[in-house]
Image 1 (tube, rainbow, N blue to C red):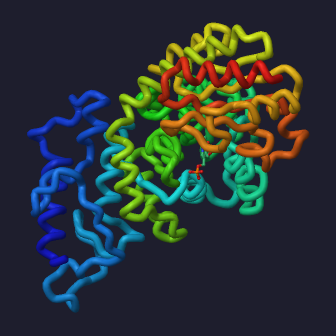
Image 2: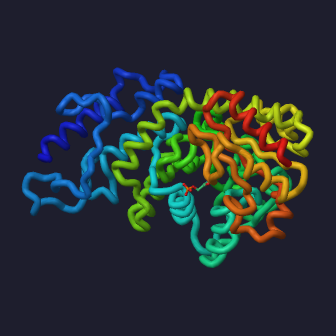
Image 3: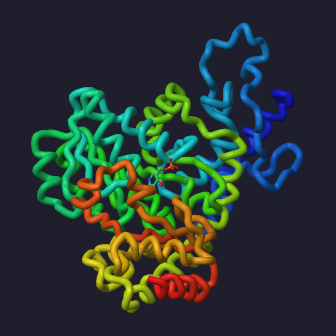
Length: 414
Ligand SMILES: Cc1ncc(COP(=O)(O)O)c(C=O)c1O
């Protein structure tokens, strides 16, 4: 590929992304999903953003000897640092999250760990909630303290405890909302107010919500993190992660990506961009199906408890209505008969696939105890309320009645 082709593609990309003639600010969420960040017309007239499947690029000066090692705006040198397909999907995500900038990674965990490494140093205090994805929980419990970070974990819904931990100074607050797997919420506006007056940055893993159901930056949150493996990609065929926030913070995060090497490859970026085009329409269906399934489960005699923020019985339903636009496709529930009952249900479903992960078109079911939260000790799970009878269901985009029929069959076997 000649250097001219790259420069022309970059030129078109700048023309579409940054052009003042096409005010992306006025675009709705679906238009942002479809058009945001796309490179537009490349030199061959391709309608979709090409996959720049290259590890390296020609030096950006005519005479390579005169290059001084700086990468000019809009140029690329080496794909671990940056790549046009990757940059296009970053622009799409930034637009959806109302962020100045975004950085994508080869996994959600690469995004989380690189962001924490970018923001924290030895001796800093990090205030975190106790309900977290299992991998993040292990980072907080085992890795950050080993590096000299003072991690203070508080009950997810206890704003008073959070404030107390921030009183003596904190560098950052780490949140998840809704949480995995119990669908608890954090009052984002309240935490932002407390954290900012204590001088702490607020970061949130917003994977369960997606930018369709909530935009934390609009509520004052500084950094939004996603496992793009889930809803953003939406087809259970990619591992990826992302971080969005201010230009300054994203530059710091991007440096860690370059150093630790968790960069997303161009093919992965293409798959993510393709998945994101339908994000808004998929989320509409996930939201609708999630609510229908939660309502069905709540009435079933073999179900002891349903966790879904869209149900009026959810203890934070009023907060969910205030800070979210939809409640998503994640439903967790406790069945009668303890672990045995949960295993029976898992063995009996036919349409819903027994697998970990979430956010894809296909409904998936798992038990957090031996999947997403297997890295916790039984005592830790018990303390958090992750019971042996807990089932985590990622409600897909199939016909709601077919999902409900399958669950009904499974529950009748308990
Ligand atoms: C809420 C949440 N955050 C982060 C992750 C980690 O993402 P990944 O598996 O893409 O590394 C997961 C994975 O299940 C998750 O559910």
